[in-house]
Length: 69
Image 1 (spheres, rainbow, N blue to C red):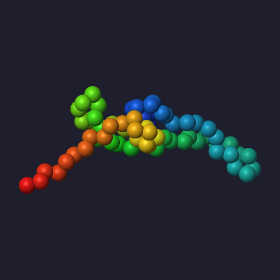
Image 2: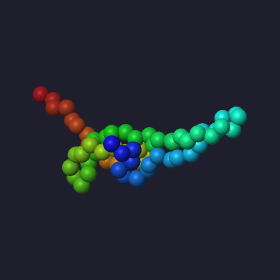
Image 3: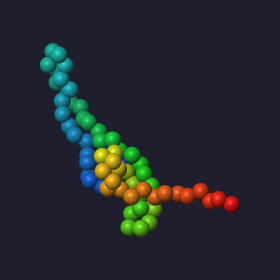
Image 4: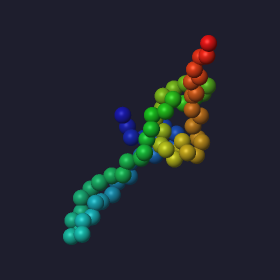
């Protein structure tokens, strides 16, 4: 599974880990992705979305209602 938001396309960001002795090693920052049941073109679908898109309201969640007797 790719670490990509399906709404905004956010991907991992690459950089360096720098110690106090200035030793440099590669590292990467991952986006905070959540798997969500959302409505995509009117149908429920499980998609991977970053939390900033969820908070901004760019995703319409699919709400499941409990049946009452």
